[in-house]
Length: 279
Ligand SMILES: C[S@@+](CC[C@H](N)C(=O)[O-])C[C@H]1O[C@@H](n2cnc3c(N)ncnc32)[C@H](O)[C@@H]1O
Image (cartoon, rainbow, N blue to C red):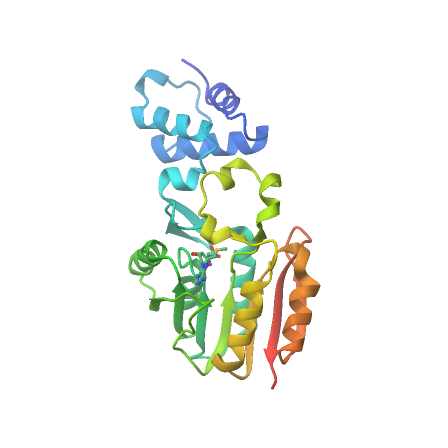
């Protein structure tokens, strides 16, 4: 028999890819998922022999650096659980901030919105459920991702129209938009070497990387498309690589967007750029 804290410490020490705090948080998530234990509960003793075998399998997967969201097949975003798969990015906290900003700044009813590169559908589904009766569309190049996004919309009872579109070569068939939003791939290939292996080995390359030669390719293409797809005074919201705030902002200004703002996330990193189409 071991105490909760002893087990937590001993299992966390096996997750050598993570710092102590991260590892303990992952193990406490494992305990909650498989055993219904909450971290706040004080358990005097636990009999490891009574644990379901799945928890040991999942611990082995965690040890390889596999993100816990892929192991469980779901992850939290803006107060809801979203299915994830190896074809989708795991929704991030920065993206919750993007969603929060859009909700806060757009209170009118019936706004027409398009999300480009939707992944799990976390952005359009959250907007569909939190905003005032919007009409929401979303596209992605990946059919597997679109299937997951569609499942999320059904499970969460959100009305979103999904379609397949390669936005580097096609234009979505949705016009007169009030809001265009995207968190596109934005990591130059050269940054791979600096990345943690739980991202590199498990998250889809298609969702993450752009060529070193043209890291802003998605931003330029989407901002250009915004000229056709947005209404006059429609808004473009981007999540960005913190290194490219000024470059994305000036590209937007050149393409006819005004009141362009670069905004910081809670970690004080430049993560969002917003502009209004004014030509
Ligand atoms: C950084 S992920 C963002 C996923 C999701 N919006 C989120 O914030 O969690 C970028 C998404 O863009 C999609 N994507 C990549 N290339 C694309 C293309 N040419 N056309 C459309 N979508 C693309 C990927 O499949 C991926 O789902």
